[in-house]
Each structure stands twice: as structure tokens, then as C-alpha cells.
Length: 390
Image (cartoon, rainbow, N blue to C red; front, side, top):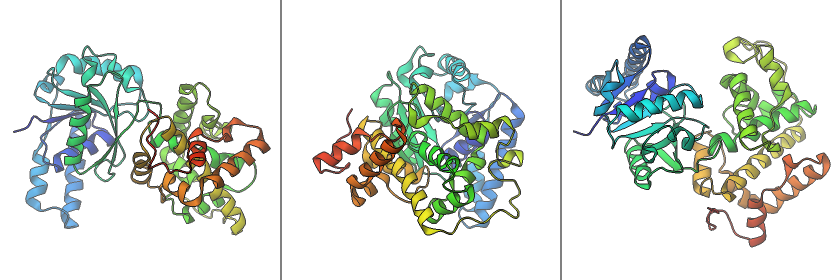
């Protein structure tokens, strides 16, 4: 019998990862510093399995077996048994480093230690360990049992064999792992920044209302408009990620946080969880969006162009290959288009011209053309025939 998977942290993400692993046939050790949280997580998992039974997605016998594969542990001393440990605790570098020091000491030397960080440096987390070669990032997306993408992030000292082992394990769990360079935001949180920031910019300039921008992007196939999505994520969380990206990239203009969103956070308008964000909740009697098709096209073109430029930049600097970036944004962020594929299909020159017009008008490097776009345009190639610049 293979060694069990241990999950540290029984919150929404941790319990989702535990459920996913158990459904894949793994024995799971679930630990949380608060035992009551672990017990609640197990009850929630069993409740989800009951729903799967009712939908005919799993048999009663299989559901019971899945629940029985999850064992609650009260001490990290039990981690000696685990072959893979996945951390899913608060997104704080110092707290994660403290935990990994403990995991490094408590687990056996061959155990792989994975962090579910969404944007922190895997290399920095691994530096807390005596054996950083066995530390890796596995960024799952919420809800973990349903979202197929997992960003796999080796740190600077991660053993290559560890990467291969983790990718193979995730594929056995029926996930779609994408190898990503250890840079702030990885793929999804980096490439998605313009979906939020450019939408706020359009609103700040008075080009369109919040409702019109959301309606335009949803009509273009995006599952949620940017303002609805920010309210769903939490404006405090979304703002913090943008601010962290801005600081991590030493003031990169494309990641500059918005004062508009900061004011919402200061006012306690965090979104759904506080009852008010860009929208009031529940959403009753909201203003109707502007039906002008020209305005909607302008919105979609500007936001999509900025997303394409960001994806091209991630490709150029070797964050991941073109297929990995497109797969990540489709399966992780549920984008309706493959950004780099769409860029070539519509013509790279089209995106370059738009960005150059905006940079000339605004005089801001926020709109500078990525060297990735220029490289593809000059070579008349596409992103899929060129290797990323590693």
C-alpha cells in the first residue's frame, strides 16, 4: 500500500484537497491546529459525497470508502507515515516558513513537502528547510475537487525528480498540472491582473459603468464580470494580491493598485462577505448596463488586449510555455479563449497597434508592448512554434 497523503490545514482549500485525494484512492491524513475544524471539514466532505450519491456520480459503497480513507490526526508526529504533505494554511510567508521548519523535522527525509501558496515564493518557503530539494509548490484552485488546473512550481533548489513525481501523482488524480517558474503570481494570478485593474481603470475614466463593464465581459464569455468577481473574491484580498504583485515586481506599472479599490477596502466594502462592495448585496434594483454595442466592444477589446499582452510577457520571460499559459487561463480562470492562440489568430499586429496607441495617448508604461508580442510579430511565427526564453 502506498504511503498516505497528509494535508495541513482543514479550511476550504485544505478540505477540498483532502477530498480530492481520497476520491482518487489515496489514504489521507488531515491535520489542523484546531481539531474542531478538522472534524467539521470531514463532516462537510461526507455531505459533499452524499450529494454526489444523489446525482449518481458515485455509489454508496464508493462514497463510504472515500470517507473512510480520511483520517484526522491530532499531532504532526503522525507525518512520518506520509509520502506527500500538502500545506494549505494562511497565505503568509513567515507563518508558512515556520510550518515548513516543523514539517522538515517531523517528516521522513524522502517525504515531498508541497505548499499550496497562490503567489508567495516557493524558494523562500523552502529556505526554511534543511532539505529544500524536496519542497515544491502545488497551487490548487478553488474548489479543488472540481477545478482541473494545478500550478506546479519548483523552487530554485527543488530536485527535478520531485517535479516529475508530483506531476505524475496529480495526473493520477485526474488533474491538469502545469509546470511554472517560481515568480510572483505564477501564471494565473499574474496574467489575470489586467482583468481587474483595466476594468477599474475604464470605470475611473468614466468610459463605462461597473454594470456595463461586467455585462460586456460576461457577454464575451467570461463566467463573471470583473467587478462581480472582485466582490466574490473579496476586495481586501484582491487588492492585497495586486499590491503584493506591484511590490514584488519593484513597482511594475501594469500591477499598480487602484485607489478606487483601496477606498472600498477602507470603507469596509469588501464585497459579498460584508454585504457591499462594488455592488450592494443582495443585488436588488441595480442600474441597467449601457446597451451601446460600440462601448461594449471597446471594453472587451481593451481588457482582452491587456490580457494578451500579459500572457505574451509571461511566455517571453519563461514563466511557462504557450500551451501551459493558455491551459492555465482556461481551466484555472475559466477564460473563454486561449489568449496566445487568439492573439496569433487575430493578428499580432492588431494588438501591438492598440497598445502603442494607448501608450502614446496616456504616456504610461502600463501600456508598453511586451517583447513577446514584438518577437512573434517580427518573426512571423506563433507562440507554439517558439520555445519560451528560459
